[in-house]
Structures are given as structure tokens and as C-alpha cells.
Image (cartoon, rainbow, N blue to C red; front, top):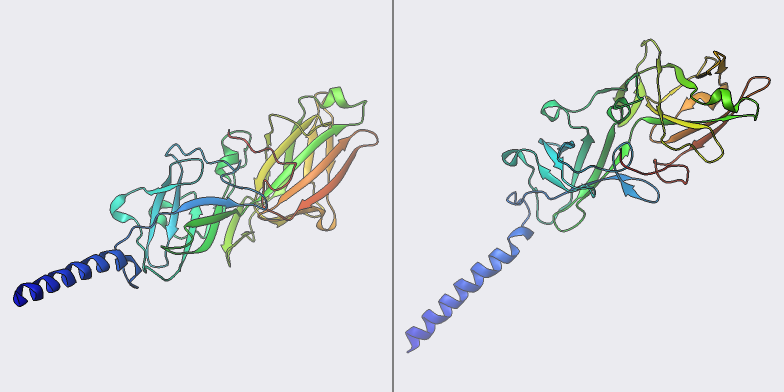
Length: 297
């Protein structure tokens, strides 16, 4: 009877040990058995969305690269909330610890072989798909198995918005006007986690995308994604009207400073004697002010 009691106690102890080990397995430091489950979002002041228009399509075509410092892998965005699944299951990342946080870096779009980004270029024609193709998102976050699973990404390019208005007599001529952004460098390099214009690269022109809806009381609104840089004492904005007239704006001082991760807004009035421009700098991530319309393409 005593032997049976001893065996019963031993079996109960073994069962308890196995159960406790299973329940606490993920708490053991150094455990690499559990795949990372992450969500990619774009960091803004007031909302958390993604891509150049701050909305993921989530149709499986969008991929980001994620690195834990030792290994990098591609992940596919599967929904508008930024849910991620590994593009190749056998190459996914695993938690290095069940209890300790670890630093993760991510960038969109994903690179070939998930190689670390060193350079980035924007498209010269952004009237169509070139706009989205010019966007670069990057971010670093501390994540943990039992804590934060969110990767906040930031737009690295400078967003330039131009609102075009007439003076009453020029309104009709401005309908269908062509706007160009001139004297901007299209190639940039990543240094210290920020994007900067490459030195020694010739400047070029960009055809911006026209928004479907203009800002209220304006004839048209345009936007482009640019490498952060300073354009000073050179023509930055050129407006060509239906009648063949051309209006040019040359910024001075810091009015031509295109700041990265921020909105750089230019309110342009065309009339007599020429062109008048007011500049507004939004030192915040896109989508955090009332001027931005958030919608999917």
C-alpha cells in the first residue's frame, strides 16, 4: 500500500513537472521555438495607417523586410491593419527570448534578399504608379513575445503638396494647368537612419500626382514624394496654363527646404503681377493634419 502511494506521488510529481514545463516554456530566456507574430503600422500623430496614402491594401502584394540584427526575412502584409505572415515559412524570424525585449528593424518595400537599404530613389513621373513607388518606410522598435508586437514605420521621403489657386481673372486659364517640380535631386542615401540627397548628383524635374479632389476654394491640388533636400535660389514650382503662359516660383532661405518624414505644403496663387506662394511646414508624419485626405488608390 505504501509502495502504491509512493508511485502515485511520483507519477503526480512527473505530470506536474511536465505540465509546468509546458506552461512556462515560453518564459525561459534563450528560447527560439516561437515564431514572431508582428503588425506593421505607419506612425502618425493621430492615426496609425500605412503606405503612401496611409492605407495597406492587404492583398498579399505588399512585402516588408524585417531584421532582428542577425537575420532578415520578408513578410507579407495580409490586411489593412498591417498583419504580417512570413513570405517563406522556413525563413521566418523567431523570438530570441520568452521574457526579454529585442530590437527589430523593418523597411518597406522589401529589398531583394532583404539586403539592408543604403540608397533610395524617387520617380520622375509620379502622375500614376510612380507616386506609390517613390515611398520609403522604415522603423526600429523594441518588441517582446509577451509585450509589444507592433512595428511603427515612418515615411522617410519628403511629401510636397501644392495647392493651386487663381485670382478670379486667371481661374479659367488654370483649369487643366500642368505643374512641375524642378531642380530636385531624385537619388538619396541612408545615413544614420535618415534619408538625404546624394551629393554630386544632377537635379531633375518631377511630374507630381494630381489629387482627385482639390483643397476647398482651390482649383487643383498636387503632391509628390521627394528626397529630403534644400532647393534655394532655383525654380522649384512651374505652372503652365492652357493659354501657354508659364509662372515660376523660386524659393529663398528655408522656404525650399523639403523636410523628410513631413509634409511641405505650398499655397500658390497665380494672377497679376505673377505668382504668390505661402509655405507651411508640417513637422509631423503624414495624415496627422486636416489637410490630408486618407483613402486607398
